[in-house]
Amino acid sequence: MPFRRIGSTSLQKLNAPQLNAMYAEMLESGRRNGKGGLSVRTVRYTHTVIRKALSDAVGWNLLTRNVADAARPPKKQKTTNATWSADQLRTFLSHVQEDRLFATWQLAAMTGMRRGEILGLSWADIDFDNARLSVRRSLVSSDYKIKVSEPKTERGRRTVALDPAMLRVLRDHQGRQLLERVAMAGDWGNELDLVFTREDGSPIHPQAFSEMFEKHVKDSKLPKLSLHGLRHTHATIALRAGVHPKVVSERLGHASVAFTLRRLHGLATGHAGNSRQSDRGARSRHIGLQSVSKAGDRVRAHEQRNPRPAGVSRSCGARTRTLTT
Image (cartoon, rainbow, N blue to C red; front, side, top):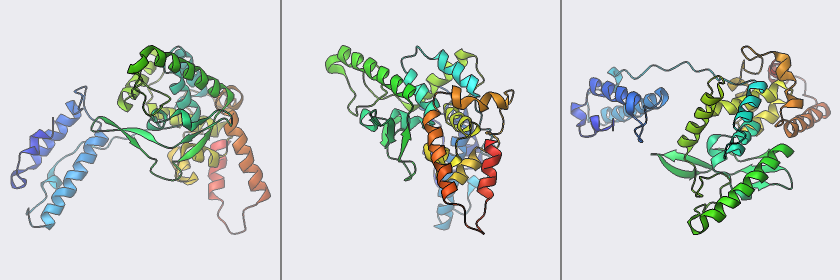
């Protein structure tokens, strides 16, 4: 493990070259399971923690200087929030239609839920009668161990509308899981009554879930996209189809509409190599937007009944028009 490079080193003997060597090793082979390196973001965060700890040591007169100030963590990568078009998303869903976990890919694409929220979903969270689900927990990885975590904010704890097609997919998955449970008999291990599990009922590790998605993307010959990119894809298709930003923001569990618009700035106005007309037709063709569109219509009706008072900024509205035209 990379941390062994400095674990037995006293504070007084620690130096910047040791930190640089550790960062390089983390990038190359830092994963706990031995399969590859850690991301630049993770390594930079590690540097931040070490730098803060050493700064405290200087403040307590345990050190005369902070050697992390002279270290060189990897440079921050310029990231782009890549998304797929509606046509590309349909291609992907068609490609994974026979996959055992097809319902997870459809749910990610049609709701914009986070990875951990999907894996932490229980059957009690799904209200088939009222066509909705409740986000109450997430499955997260800490030290490569699966843990249950609650939403970090009140907006993260939310209700998400489901369309008839999504409900049918979930019903089919429920029937498949029941067969697996019968086959496993006393060895079934789904103590949390999770919707999505391994064949033996045990939870799916978040990292393994991401790796499954990456393999499907590669096999489908589609442009490279992260699992989180499905979340952005859902949001941008919804915005380009005319769904109100407030609805999209609430559906994603964002802190505010402004945050949603900042995060997706530039994505909803165009996809490289895809026509605007193609995605503008997504509302009728993209099966995950019916319930979202209805919610957007309700928001617009509310705004018409309650016009914005004079003197209140309309900057958010202007930005909304830019995204939905």
